[in-house]
Length: 141
Image (cartoon, one colour):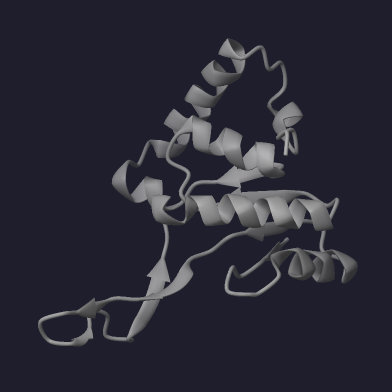
């Protein structure tokens, strides 16, 4: 599995290149390069000057990138970036993810993955979804 950086101009092309080179799957996205400046000191708030932005703030961008990658490849896609609820996982799958990964939410709640998985089962049952896999690429776009 190849983890694709979101800091590219064409994520679909990057997914295609990875698949064409023999990748069995791709995962996306990671953190976005960002910068925060302290307005009082006029200096970066991070010692390295730039750092990674992750979590719920990047979810809409991550979902778009999963969608674009899913149009470019047929290999499995693991979507990530701001998944804190079952509905977030559903959204990634509708956009084209075959599976999802939870990261930042686990820092705030060590049981986040368990809770999301249990709530995903409930969501599927309440929406007459027999197999979670049927959600992959099922968005009406």
